[in-house]
Image (cartoon, rainbow, N blue to C red; front, side, top):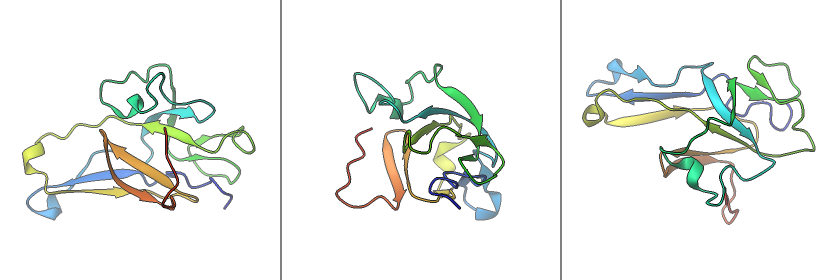
Length: 138
């Protein structure tokens, strides 16, 4: 697997677990369409964090199906120009929780090769392989 091959590949799913975990609801299914922006520029300007807010318009971003990869043959959206051009991809996906008061937990399942930072609305609940002291300005 190359350096980026698994960035959110085929396993992006958010689960909202109600009172009984058996009643889990898939909020974003595997292979769902996402809005994405290649990391050649900040994702939003003049505020580089605006893209993480619900009201941000991502209508100018491309649309693609997870997984996002280059090199290795996966199913999804191939980023054939990524190698030696850019090292990040910004992904956005809207989902609706039908009964927020009943949600006891959310589970994020993601497969990645290098690392990722997850934002849900403006909260960063998790990150993987993103070293301490490394700033994620965007």
